[in-house]
Structures are given as C-alpha cells and as structure tokens.
Image (cartoon, rainbow, N blue to C red; front, top):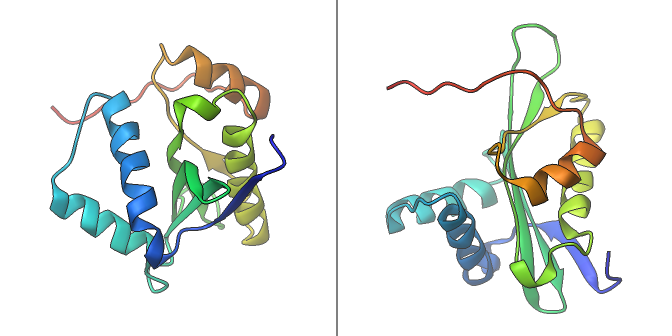
Length: 149
C-alpha cells in the first residue's frame, strides 16, 4: 500500500468526500439511491449511538480514495455477534495498490477488538478483480444469495 494512505473512521465533516465514493460504488452495481437515502446512510454511519454500523475512509493526502461500511449483528449459531462487510470501494485510479486490502484489514482489526471473530461479505460472481483480492484474504463459501421477489 502506498505509504501516504491513511484509514480512519468516517467523521461528520467527511460527507463531501464520502458521497462521491458511495455513489460510484452503487453505480458500479448499476444502482442509485435517493438523496434522502444518502443522507440517512451517512447519518447512521457517523452516529455514535448507531453501534451496529461502522464506516471508514481511506485517504491519500486530503483526497478520499476508498470506503468500507460494516454492519454488526447477532447470529443464531454462536454467542458472539458477527460483522457483515456491506460495502467496499476504492477509486479506480488507486486500485491494485493495497487500499482495499488495508480497508478489509481495518474491518478485521475492528471485529477482533470487539470479539467478533466472524467477518463475511458478498460480491458478484463476475467481479474478478475484487475476487482476486478476496481469495487472498478470505475463504469463499458455497452459499448462493436469494432475494425476495
């Protein structure tokens, strides 16, 4: 990872830097949300009372170049909660430089510090670039996701 990259929790003043990254992430998955959802999502991630939602930004100098969002929740098969890595995105110009891996490692460290040994996430089958990284930092499962029709 480039030495000038720093990762820190999302802050209230980060919205102008965070919003374009999250919009680009959603566009990658061919979706968008209303401005109200952007506002609500950001508010949840910066609210210290919202203990089950966390977010971090990766910075190169004063430019945000990546984000990661997680949701923690109880699990029916174990006593400790688990971490769901919901969103991970790096700016195209910085890809392949270790930023996504550092963001995942930040999530792992947060989960470990809180006693949540299980961290999981989803990606599209055809997301080859991301899956190349994921295959190095995690283990793929045989589960298939279904959504209510």
